Amino acid sequence: MKDAFKEALARFASGVTVVAARLGEEERGMTATAFMSLSLEPPLVALAVSERAKLLPVLEGAGAFTVSLLREGQEAVSEHFAGRPKEGIALEGGRVKGALAVLRCRLHALYPGGDHRIVVGLVEEVELGEEGPPLVYFQRGYRRLVWPS
Image (cartoon, rainbow, N blue to C red):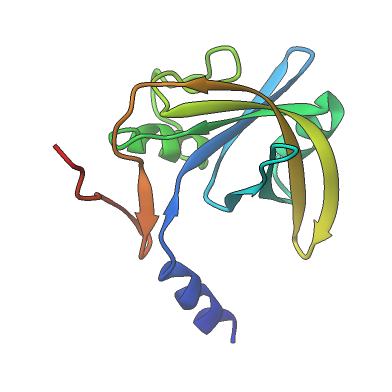
């Protein structure tokens, strides 16, 4: 069942985000594909964070976080925040430079979700970057969309 479940989920395409939070001097970020819009009124987003993630206590303590929506070409950024460090990649003010958009959120609610925590954020600020194709993850790899010229 577990292997079939993982294979089924690999067949679902998703955008790639980096979720970040800062508590005092500690700043953490993690790559997340389990992200979605939840409500327009009020503006809410939801994501899943592993109970073992170093980001979770920072996010909870800070009561705030950012979500950077990655663009095509930011594969190294995704890898870095997925635990495979790359030289020269860092957050700038809690966001990923060059992202398609950055959502600044206040922690709205936390719910148990098996081995993850479901995090709901109230979007307080939206920063739009340049338009372009998103970074997409499908079948255990990054994929390209056909982008209108």
